[in-house]
Length: 367
Ligand SMILES: Cc1ncc(COP(=O)(O)O)c(C=O)c1O
Image 1 (cartoon, protein in one colour):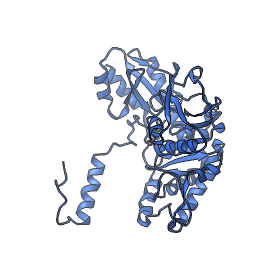
Image 2 (cartoon, helix red, strand yellow):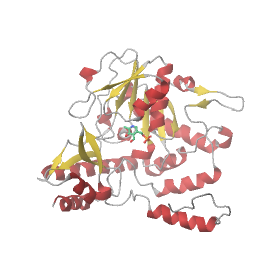
Image 3 (cartoon, protein in one colour):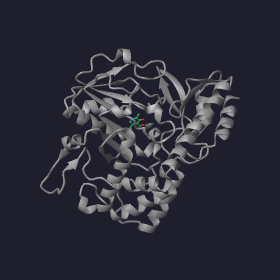
């Protein structure tokens, strides 16, 4: 370990620690904006958002108390008012990630009478985790060959919160977005939700019939962590998951108590880029993923698993050893299991990715 084994009795001083930490963070963090980086759902932070996070931290705004965060509170209301209509939703709030957004939404579902949670076998782990925390039964439904929930196997949903995923973690599949007669419909759009603001909006057609939606802004809205939205069709559901307290001027909505002003960098990014600027970045990611998939489909040494739907590409080497190829690809690829088999995985979340350079690296790895 690089740190003293116990808390030092005497401090090193701010300057020394600043330089040490600045260097350590730079040296030992993945470079998400590197042209070869294409492995995960985490984008590099835009400069504007990064600067605002630092500035905002100096004021340490707390969304729990509107009096401590008048600007941040207004910024969050504005973000929700701008984004919710793209999804047919009418209310919502921000939280630290879609794990929490899924938990919050399923809490609301339980308050609305849902007794069990049903989701596909490819749903994110936060979905069964939330069911467990909430004391709700959980049922996983098999997926079809495209990685979508198999609607023929949904079973009885009249007491269930059905969770459909718009952009599964492993392969980016979009479940058929319809109510399917569920008591509550939650769409986990943590990854692919922002496609609604692009020319690919139709891929998420049907999302507007959801009761609740989770979206990670720290994925395809290019935000630093911790930034996500939970949206509701019925604004009253926010009250169903609120607690008042003698020391609170307004009730605490949702799971988190004190929370930071993630809406400020998000609002600033949306304002700086506009809808067209955001769409252009996402559409470039989509084009990048397609270009990579086309390259892999044409390469004799590679087996493409499926055409990308939400900028997630899965493939594996046909002749070379999987581990050797994975190691040679470094930050260009991650890995995932599909039906028990190991596949490489690329996620196009990096606006600075250089696809020809990544293809050249793949070519070298495949020999
Ligand atoms: C489909 C899906 N849902 C939920 C999550 C959890 O989101 P977060 O990492 O923001 O907690 C992820 C994360 O990758 C995801 O891919």
